Length: 171
Image (cartoon, rainbow, N blue to C red; front, side, top):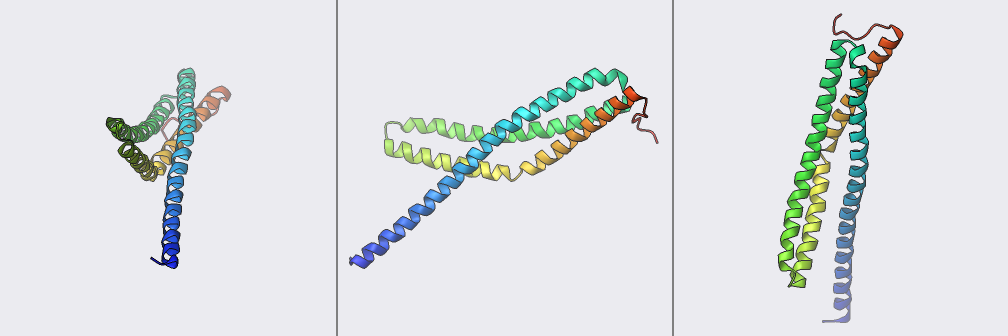
């Protein structure tokens, strides 16, 4: 093999390794971003649902029956969408955690263990990116419905306090 062939082969190998490194870092970036966003999302959303239902319970006797039922129904749909999203994420995580646990069966063979560990991590990162494609279809309706229920509740609470007309469901 000539020096030029060796250099060309080394260059091609370096380019392949660089592309693999970029892909791995992209997967890691998506995984990190997803993890941080999920933690923040869970805290804010859970606190939001808890606050809504606490406010609803406090104002329920002062607002019209229609407004109470409408806000609970709208917030209920929002909550169902949120729970479905969390369930989808949990299924994805558990599938790869189960595979990860099986990799420890090969702990005595470091090469196989490391190869399978890396492959599982890459597959998990790719699966998370695929699941994230569905996020807007859960998050946006859930957020819009949650905000709508909050606005209806707030308006009716203010209407009760200031003697404005409340939403009754009748024209």
